[in-house]
Amino acid sequence: SGASHSLTLASPLRLRKIADKTFAVSGTPTDCVMMACLHIMKGQLPDLVLSGVNWGSNLADDVTYSGTIAGAMEGCALNIPSIALSQCYEEGARNEIDWSAGQTHGPATVAALVKAGWPAGTLINVNFPGCPADAVKGVQVVRQGKYDLSSTEIEERIDRSEEHTSELQSHLNLVCRL
Image 1 (cartoon, helix red, strand yellow):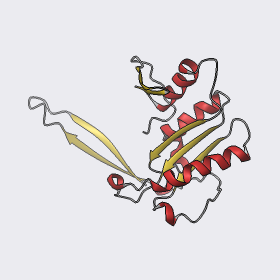
Image 2 (image 1 turned 90 degrees about the vertical axis):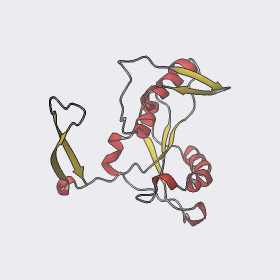
Image 3 (image 1 turned 30 degrees about the horizontal axis):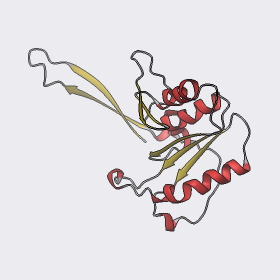
């Protein structure tokens, strides 16, 4: 979502009951976790927060921009063990994501993590590979990576608005390429 750990402050949050134990919140992932834990489940917090499964990986420094990671961060802030789950996909294949790796291996991965446990305040970030479930060769635990941003290019351009014919408005856009 790119929502990071943002909250909805300037507009009302909408909570809609979809079915028994199923709700929709018109806010950020952080809003969703707060609404669930502090309103819907008030007095009986969950044993675990699962945030995701979202499309796209959450790797390296990109985790700081992730709403999925933020949902799990909010769970940690509420002292609830939390896991962020993401489904990787091949570049350019966003409309053809194969969700089978997460669907097939997600429940066992979460169960193994819960059984193993982890330190309080630590969020677990799981990225399922962008391949069919039967091509998954195992699970690997790695440290959080870091991007080398020194090669980032920033392109400057001026866009002209066609909507305002009497007065052209210039907008400066910065486009970053990693």
